[in-house]
Length: 255
Image 1 (cartoon, rainbow, N blue to C red):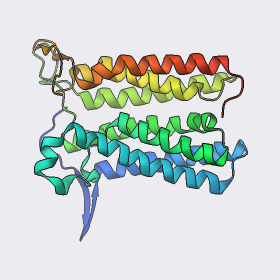
Image 2 (tube, rainbow, N blue to C red):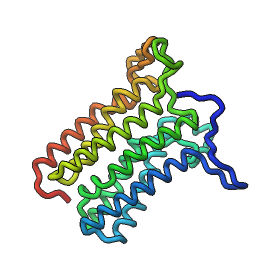
Image 3 (cartoon, rainbow, N blue to C red):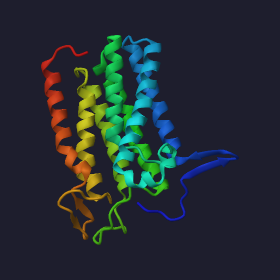
């Protein structure tokens, strides 16, 4: 979605600049921490463990997400190296953040002999909410733009809206699965990863104006393009998720 005369800045108070992207990211982080802390305490985890783990996840999630985004847009950042650390202006890759969060939290849980699988499930609502809110902030940043489509209602696809709706849908689906109960640790997390990967690849990425790396087919009428880097990584990630769900189903106790 492209809107004229919108500003990425929400509020300016002297040297303090509050951006929509930073606000949405902060809301999702605080909400995610509240949910994780509340339910982790009920499962017997200590307050200190929860806080330390959350800070580790937050740091490496941002580092991983930014690293992958910078790597995939290296020509631009090579000319503008001072923008590499400006995450307040947008530019976080979901899969990089996911990898950073998984690896850092898994290592910490192994060192502390904690059940990583159960904690991973508790992280899903915060991540899903973050996807929904950050995509709204992308509208104000005028990024994640969709392709132009001759047969569409608008000039171009509102891919930020698609992404936000994906986050909301996954949050609702997670809540449905969680209420059913009797879910083995890790089941909710890997279902979320698989759902996001599938919906992102089929919907958002197909209509998003990203560079094509294979085949290079674009339908000007429908504004659909194939294949981007995300398209190519979608099948192996889904295969990994299916394997993890199969493995979780076979194991009674997971740590």
